[in-house]
Structure formats: structure tokens, C-alpha cells
Length: 207
Image 1 (cartoon, one colour):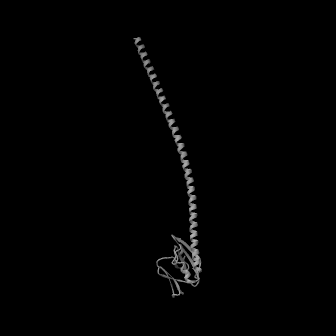
Image 2: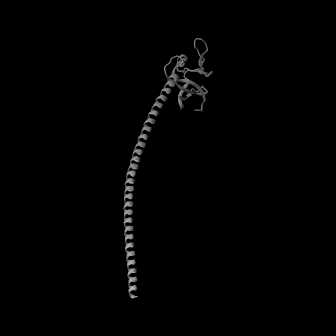
Image 3: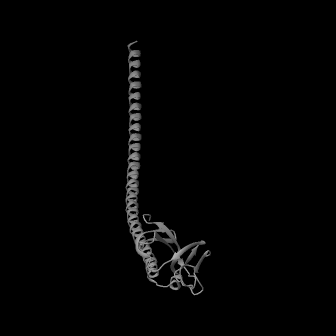
């Protein structure tokens, strides 16, 4: 009977030892798997870090290039605006010179040379000799020409391809004159330059 107990005890100890060994093997395998997974995750993290650094560098370069491009565009816009302003000023100055020349003429025949070629524009005189009273017809509305009537420029503005110049007039004239200037041929010559498209009567206080 004692022999059987010893056998049973031995078997139990053997089973416990086998289970312990198996548990140890399982733990060892689990540890190996954890190490492998840790190494894999470490490699992925390193790969992500390298990719992040590369993309971050690319982003910084792109931002720098974009900043350089914005600065270049800004400079180009300034140059274009400067050129546009220069062109507009030259055109404006040319239109003003044309009116200044017009207001200095002393004969109606000379004044006729400043009028643009346009349908609905004509001129009239009191007789066939060209004596005054005389004037122009703009859109079939009469405008009387008078010597030394135009004084100094008081206002201007640009509307598309037209330049509007408003001038003071002599004291005995009730309205100021607004010259609508266009670039094109004249009634008696085909040279392309700033010419009078119309002369409007403006109240003395208007611009």
C-alpha cells in the first residue's frame, strides 16, 4: 500500500514537473514573440521617423520655395503696377498737352484739328468764310467755340479708354468745360493720338 502511495506521489511530482517545464517553454516562446514584436515595432517606428523627417524636410523646402515664389510674384506685381502707372501717366500727360494746345489756338480752323473722327460730330460757322459765332456739334448738340475760354485744369478721371479732363473757364462763361479725350484719328488727318471726342458743359462747382 505504501508502495502505491509512493508511486502516486512520484507520478504527481512528474506531472507537476512536466507542467512546469511546459509552462516555462510557453513563457519562453511568449517572450520570444514579444521580443520579435518589439523589434518589429521598433523598426516600424524608425521607418515612420525617417519618413516623417523626409516629408518634414520636403514641406520646409516647399514652404521656402512658396515664400520665394510669393516674394517674386510680389516684386513682379510691383513692377507691373509701376509700368502701368508710368504708361497711364504718359497717356494722361499726352491728353492734357493736347487740350493745352487746343486752348491756346486763336482760330476756329485750328481748333477743328483737335476733334476726333466720329459719327455725329460736325462743325458750324456763321458764314462760308468761317467767321464766328462758330462751334462744334457733338451728338448733334451745339457747342460754341470761343477764343481764350479755357483756363486751368481742375479735375480729371480715367474711364476705360477715355480720359475726362475738366477745366475752369473764363469768368464770363457760365459753365466749365469737360473734355472727353479718346485716342484715334482726327476729322482732317489720320494720325492716332489723343483727341477731343466731346466737350461737355459742367456747372462751375461740378467735377
